[in-house]
Length: 326
Image 1 (cartoon, rainbow, N blue to C red):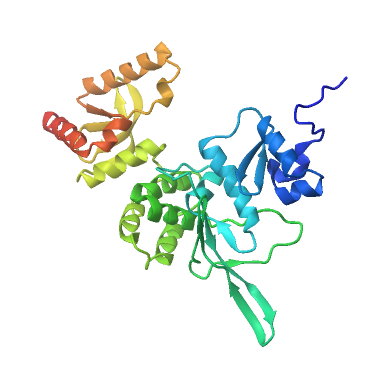
Image 2: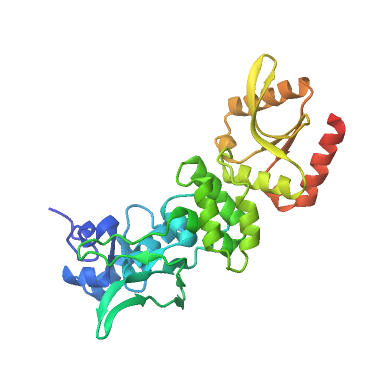
């Protein structure tokens, strides 16, 4: 005999909405009232994303960026006739790395609707902005247009990736634009030319100067957010980092994260990922690689996440390496 669910609801909840995301109105059409939804949340089969919006839970409840992604998709559906998912919310939906993204509010951008018939002739409507706990809808950008959604198309509209990258920088600072820009370039989700045009669309916005300067150095050769931030910091300190340089040492070809241009100083960013499992062969290979570089006269500076928040510490270490390599 099939056990009776603790919440008393016998149905496939994925039928309530695409991707397991649905509104209370969607649930009502299937006979689930607010009391049933509350019971489903209590038993862990659903999670409440926002006012009137829910998601089906498979396994552990969504946290952090995953919860923000689901909430962005839900609110994108709610406002799909008025706005597009934008800023870091769009980047998270596309699974593009972000930096210091505020996950407490979903960000959307108002759009110009299609022209509609009015009493005195054609009227072009403009959606209003919204700011309330959990959601912000920003004013329209560059005449961004939004076609009237088809009745059965529930997909939310999305800001183009290059524009969302610039918006993320306007909210969080230069690195908040540069980290997703490098990843998007590496994944062919944008081009340098598209980034230039996106910056131009925001030329009158407060704070665009630092974002423009940072994106001028966007480089898809940076393989992680840590490498992006390392390059940004080194340039800000007056050094000239060359990414992904190949060096022959002990008859082997090595590729290093950065070489300080025209010197024999190498800068490596050590993220936690490659050491996470603690395998001794990984640590041994890394040491053997560094020893080979040192025997060939290269000075290696290793940086970790904590170092990137202490510019003067990094400056001193690189200057010391340069003095020893001279």
